[in-house]
Image 1 (spheres, rainbow, N blue to C red):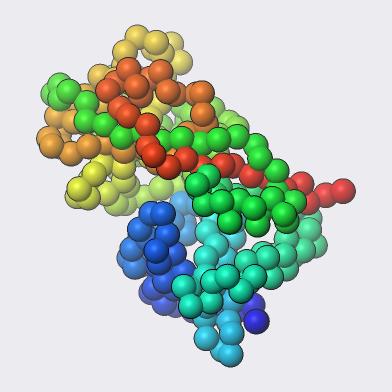
Image 2 (cartoon, rainbow, N blue to C red):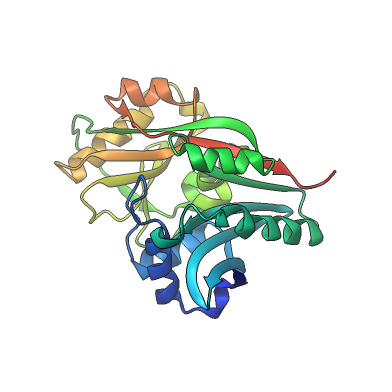
Length: 269
């Protein structure tokens, strides 16, 4: 097996490979170059530091590596169905861990679906440690029309605390662009994925500090439900367990069946 930089392939080919390596996975990954490009930009994925695994020259695996400061993140790792169960996962990731150490990174992190037991065991065998459990929610709030003001995602990012998972961190939310859009009602701001999708993906929601605990967040959810009637709102499994359950359950949401584990590996001795 050889590892080559992901930057050697054009974006549309990487999108196709990304979909192939997650074929039959717990969630469907579409071959959508525009969405793949948005993921790369928003999550600070470095295609120069990401790797394609090749066997006899054919791409059979992909590791997407994101970087911020001295931290690295495995933003996605998968193998095409025909080459799974050949112990390629560790062989793909270990060299990237060494590269991260060599460039001075202090930590590598990742998220893995908790129900994906083989992947959890692989990462823990490589020395990754559990940090916290991440959960998600889905629901259809009771519609309540309100005037939605469209703003930039950074308006929400500024209200988010530090220490959140990578996909929910202020730096990620601030870097989102179309088709992602952000809306404000009073002191509350929410960031949505592509609003033309069947389900509205709620990427983030935050309320100005002085207005928290007064129902502003739930009023915004009801306003979004009124603006796009008949569509559910879904929050991916990126929310730290114990942080927002009361808010979402009180708004009529239900927990997602799948959860994630956030794992971390200290790269320095």
